[in-house]
Amino acid sequence: MAETTYAKGLEGVIAAESEVCQIDGARGKLYYRGYSIEDLAEHASFEETTFLLLYEKLPTKDELDDFSQRMRAARGLAEPIQSMIRQFPPAGSPMELLQSVISYLSSSVEHQIRHSTTCNCRDTLHQIAQLPTVLAAYHRFREGKSYVEPRSDLSVGANFLYMLRGEEPTPEEGRIMDICLTLHAEHGFNASTFTARVVASTYSTCYCSISAAIGALAGALHGGANERVMDMVEEIGSKDMVDAWLDKALGERRKVMGMGHRVYKAKDPRSIVMEKMLTDLSKQRGDASLYEMLKQIEKGFRVRMEEKGKPIYPNVDFFSGAVYALLGIPRDLFTPIFAAARSPGWLAHILEQRKDNRIFRPKALYAGPEPRAYVPIEDR
Ligand code: COA
Image 1: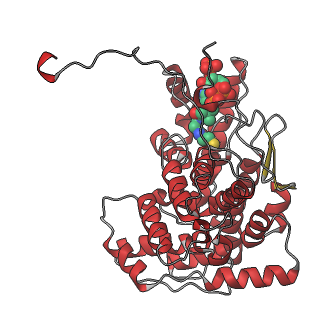
Image 2: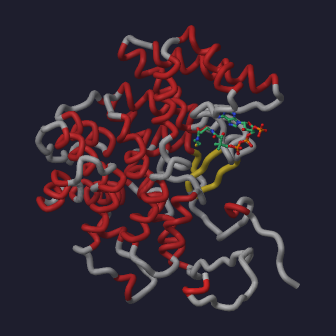
């Protein structure tokens, strides 16, 4: 009998087994390989989190030292890549630039995957170590500034801010940036991770998989909500305009950016960590106006949604745009930073896919015309 049903967008379909990430949407919990996001944010660096994702365990001190050294040694950009960034068309997006750099880097690697099911991404660490440097260089070049060599005595987050600004950030700023990367490092079978796994399942290289994943993340339905939160803040203008704006926006059935989540039906645990960092940063800056505005939006939205019996909570994007803005990061780098932060998660899934591979090959429910006679062009 012909099948007649399917899951649009694969919603609710379990497409693989995975040991990388557990999301408990009902209780608002997130774990990378069994470790809670709260513990990782508080105790682990982005490098340690990356090791956990790639090697399936927390590193010993020696393992972490060795791994950090390898990651840091891989940060610098070769001259041809710097020149490629300089010459990238100004109308191009930084996400396209990241895809191009990944493809370029791929050509310098002898890919093991052509001969076996393993992958050399853990050896080169290209996708994780170089992307923050690419973004910092991209921003500096477009401002007419020079390339800043990465420093090997700074964490990934601190070094990114250093390369972006050309000045060392405060230890607090560096730590906040590092935690932002950790919070975005992995999140289960979302569209970009699934894309990476589909490409990996064909035995294509990890570079092709990551480039495809970046392409998936570039779409408006996946990355980018934090940029739109900041657009929304700008559109509202001031705290006293929040209620009127909410009434109008919800009346027009517009979505309030940074609110709600397909999986979390409680507060997104990452938003709680983000909010704390935003309050810390606001205090350091002596200006809490952005934070207060966001809280006003959160409160006004909650009240209105509760009246409709639909409690909706902030997601990770609600506070992250403001954190990045206070760190001086331009808005169009928010999604590319997400890509750089997510690369360890993508690679962990690529490695997992290869360990027990079966090429993805779902079916479609055919809804086209029945077989029919070809019509010669002069008779159409
Ligand atoms: N603003 C206004 N209404 C919202 C909302 C938001 N941010 N999020 C959910 N709702 C509404 C839905 O439209 C739905 O209303 P309905 O019952 O009249 O159809 C109801 O609340 C329940 O929605 P729910 O099923 O919980 O969410 P969803 O799975 O349909 O949508 C998102 C999830 C993420 C797509 C949605 O919340 C959204 O678009 N958020 C804003 C964009 C954003 O921040 N994205 C980043 C996600 S990490």
